[in-house]
Image (tube, rainbow, N blue to C red):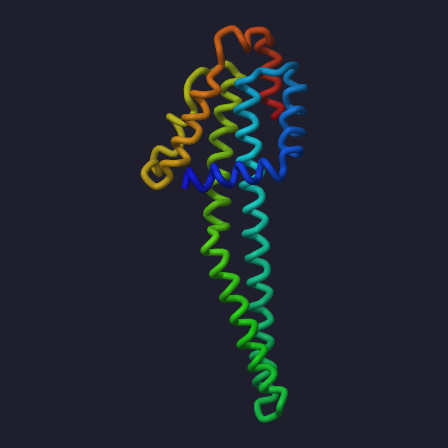
Length: 192
C-alpha cells in the first residue's frame, strides 16, 4: 500500500503543485520563516490531507449516486407493478435492469479502486503527520508515531512506517526552532 500511496502522491503533487505550495507558503509566512525540516513535514501533511479529502469526496459522491439510483430502482418497481400488462411495464422492467447494472458496476469500480479505504487510511496518515508537525513546532522531540495506532499496528503497518520515515528525515536540528519564542510557537500550535 505504501507504493500505491507514493505513486498517488507523486501524481497528485504534479497535478496540484500550485495548491500545495500555496498552502505551505502561507503557513511558513505565518510561522515567520522557512525551516527546511518543518517545510518538508508540512508539505507531506498537506498532500496527505488533500488526498484524503479527494477520496472523501469520491466516496460521498459514490454513495449519493448509488442511493439515488436505488431510489430510481424503487420507482421502476412501482411503475412495473402499475402497468404489468401494458407495454410501459416492459419499459419499466428494462429500466430496472439497466439501472441495476449501472449501480452494480458503480459499486464494483468503487470497491476495486478502494475509495473509502483510501479515504480513511490517508486521513489517518494525514493526522499522524499533523500531530508530528505540531509536536515539532511545540518543541516535543519524540516521534508521535510511537503513540499512534498501537492496536491496529499489524493491519496498518504502512501508516505507521510512513510518518516514522518522514520524522527521521524531517527531525529538527538543534538550534533551528530556538530562534522563535516558545510563546510564538505555542500560539501557532493553538491557532492551527
